[in-house]
Image (cartoon, rainbow, N blue to C red):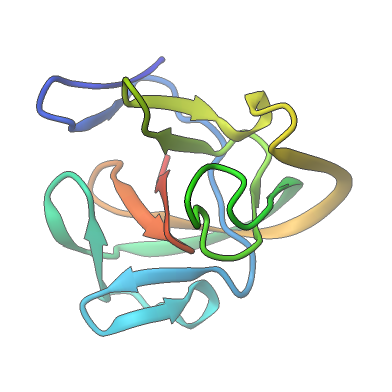
Length: 138
């Protein structure tokens, strides 16, 4: 189960499949960096607690989903974004919701082919900025 607390801190009781594909731009203290160029120790900007050190990057192969540029609102994401099919994303509207990308029928195209995914590991799970979207790390 995943939830945002009243102070918008992300908590994860079940580790969902998370991951970004090559070329995804992540916001860091150095600026925008492609996920494949991130290194252990880089400080990633998080929504919940500011810049946090990246502890590790795991690579895996899994089904992915494509979120098309602008399909989630005004210029969100900023470019076509491919993520793990079960990646959680923060959506804003009347209420802020944390949902699985695969549940966004119409906004997302899921692929059956497997893709290399980069999973960012921190001391705990966070919401990060990737291609202008707010995505969870776990």
